[in-house]
Length: 247
Image (cartoon, rainbow, N blue to C red; front, top):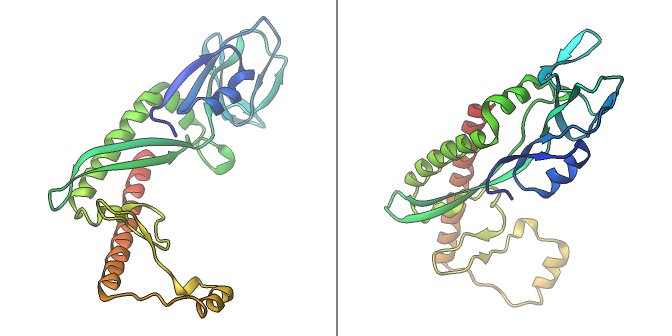
């Protein structure tokens, strides 16, 4: 999980995949030029921008032009052609904690948010490759990080202000499992869900002790389910707003 988004230099395109895999938050690589040769290569899993005498040049095939060059060996090009920018295609997980959020009942909470995103520009998926060039020269990794932080922090603080502190635990995405959110100072407890019990569970339950559930437990469980449902809804709305802003 990355805490920031960065770009970096590398000696050759051969090291690109290793660097993208090892450095968290690395989005853009600027490979160096080797000795004079009449070919260049582009690694898979990356968007590549190629330049001629330092100026971008589009890839042309069958009468169509695109800003991103395909992976593979590109022979019969003079030495002044080369890969200037490599942008990863893989999804990136960015950790963006928001501290000291005030809830509806004026309780201060810390909300840890992880955003999963990728740079769009894959023509095979119907995306515009020109977006890659726009990202490299206009937005840049640091600019994207700042935009994501500002948009996400604004959304999270507004979200926290609309909920009570007992409901904040429900904004965990994907937490509609068999667990009840923990209360301050207590651990989360697992609840038994009869709807997913197997035949073996039903047979063994006849020999085990009965579990008594009081009215307060049922009430807490209903409150937890309500918080989770509300949390899933508002988290989905926040994700949709971010997608609309950055797509």
